[in-house]
Length: 239
Image (cartoon, rainbow, N blue to C red; front, side):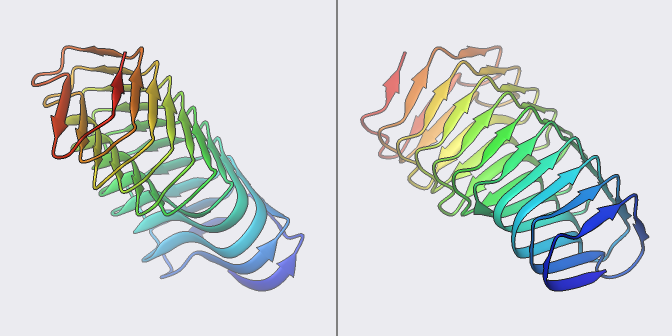
């Protein structure tokens, strides 16, 4: 399904199986998807490029290369499922999105991959048994990451690189290889009221970042360090 330069489209209860590309929207605004299922697609199950004000609700993205790709502004993804995608469940660029109350499992590289995204809220998602749980990379700044569960992921629960002034609160990060990792000069991030436990390496790692605040978190039963500081990590606050 392909659409470009359109407004006001509604896609309901669609099933797509097996093509190289599933749904591709370019410069499509004020549109919605509900109850759609996209599987066994060679590239992106759903690709929304330069598109604004889109709602995706109760959709399923299973066994694709990447389930869902977002590049635009003000896109909401809620109550959807992404599982067994060989690369990523959701790949998010642009900004001002909401990714809420989704279930992501068994995605190869990562469940939620945020690349250069800003002013986005990621909340109430359950992320399990993927490569990395939630990634923020390459200038993913001023985002709010709250109330998510990242459990039993092969590598990191959270992997954050070169991203600044994000807020991580009320997340549960447990039984991953690594809990929460910040590297590549992450500055001004706030971690508060998270539970980081039973990870097989460290709980929280800060590598070469400054001005980060780690406040009132529960960090327990991690096999190695609870908090691991590397490189030029300066002016960070731990309470």
